[in-house]
Image (tube, rainbow, N blue to C red; front, side, top):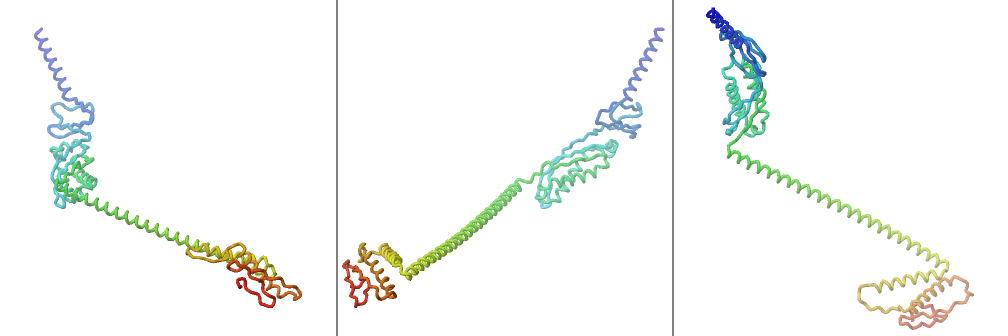
Length: 345
């Protein structure tokens, strides 16, 4: 009996161990972001999603365990000949995501190697169709063209290429030096042009300033001439009015007016001769008595002239004593003799 119990116990234990093994083989826990393919007798049957899944032990097995998250691949550096026969070294990166686990597992043998090689081939094709200057200045165009070509090529593999970036483009050292000299020469040319433009603008502004100054100066001279002419005109009008008033006064017999007029002219003439810059000697009756006598003589002449038209019964006044240029007095003229001038002896 104990032997039978011992054999039965072993059988039960074996059954329990087998059941545990079957459970462990049939229950699968798939982590998040992963998908597993299931093969039955070597043929693909289904894809296990993240979570706790069951398969048939000894019949089904796990084929491929794929990462469904977005992944990054480095593209190795390679030498590329551009359209203008310049040798450059280029590398890049690829961002891709598996969308169909079955296609990614069974449509291509090695997904990562195939994607990298396909990208390197298209990099050579795209970069080789461009000039060096276009290659260095159109990174976005190159990336967009590579993305379109590679994504279309990897679509049958159940892969979505989200981005391709050219990481570095390195021309040869001698070509870099030539480009630096060319850039320096171009910048010097632009600086020379800008400097010349600045000098030209400065000359134009300077000429405009001189022109405006000349115009303002001419306008000033014109205004000054107009004011001078106006002043001379007013002075002439004032002189004419003064002369008219003196003439009217003389005509009406006002002896004081002609005395004032002649004395004013006499004093102005003396002032003009005295203020002349030439060195000269003048013998003039500049003493006060001589000037007063001359004025009295002029007044007497005017009075005698105006008195001719009056009545003859009026007695004539005695002629005043006129001073000579040397200061001696001139005796009065006789009634029968004609009247002498103020400077006659």
